[in-house]
Image (tube, rainbow, N blue to C red; front, side, top):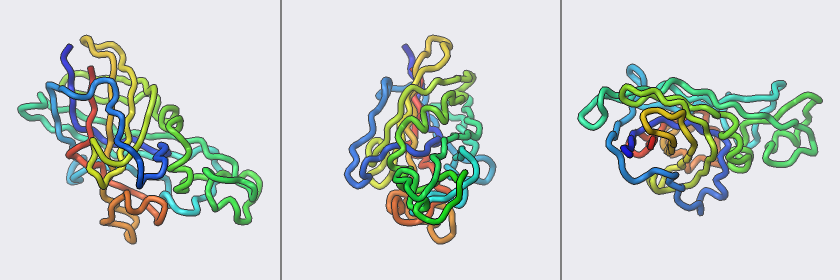
Length: 238
């Protein structure tokens, strides 16, 4: 069976990293090693990369409070340029990953966030703390991005996410946080499964964090937008 492997954007929030400094390498998924298509990823228009954009004001130490029970992280549109190893290229539309916010009160403990120890009213819901980012679990991505859709060459695949994991290092660089999503695709030309690995590297917003490595900012400062590394983020369809 032929395998397609190409670079893709990240779609990630609240994946368990389990102590990022000591996390092990990502699981490669069910079909990792070989591929007949290898495509680089770029941003749309003048943007050099695709990005992950966390709900405002971003992921913070204390977290934030909302009157809504949900919060959404989004990714910007990705373009897969055509080339000798990528056929006519492809694209991935902007994605939205929805997470359920836990209720916030003075007795709330992580993963809701330290903000819940402050004076808050009834009907407040917590989101966006580093506690929740590290501890909430893969279920946030599995339920928040149930059906990723992407186009490779002339084929459009609709996936069903069945699992997710996270870590630091290979197949990302040693200084990147990576997210691996696995699942099935609606049968098309013999393909049935997918594995996506997304590597987060440079923070671009807010201004005070811009230019720093995402890994260095985890747990310490505010991150609103982070780039997806186009050199080692991949999706495999088999």
